[in-house]
Image (cartoon, rainbow, N blue to C red; front, side, top):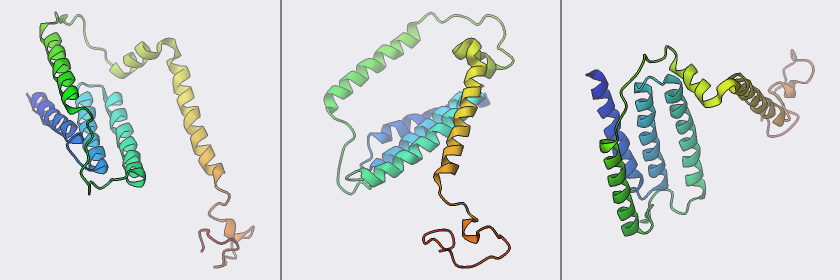
Length: 187
């Protein structure tokens, strides 16, 4: 019973926020409405017991939508919605296509002969999902992921010319207030 309540508590805001993406005049507001919808979807995935995928969806969408909001504010002609705009082109055609697609999918869901469960659920669904997606290459992909993360961190560290102690020179005990290079940490 509590799972049903949580499902509907996440499903309704997900759909409502998805609709609001197309109703807002502001690109920034539309971005945060999309974030709300995707966070609710991540909660639904967590509710299914797929903890890893749910957390990945929440983290990825939060970061992606935050970056998208920044770029919307920087580059869009009307980021704050001060002038009327629309996110939908060809409203009538889009509405007909959406209604037909929804009807087809709903009919498919209701009329499909769903199989009954055979066997027990796996003890570790995340491991089984990883093995089914990547097969025997799962260890390779995990190692590659760590190597890519280490590469990203290393490039950020190496991209800065100065470290936080560069203004002190070789002798860290003689702290001078003057920074020899303008624009650094010490002015």
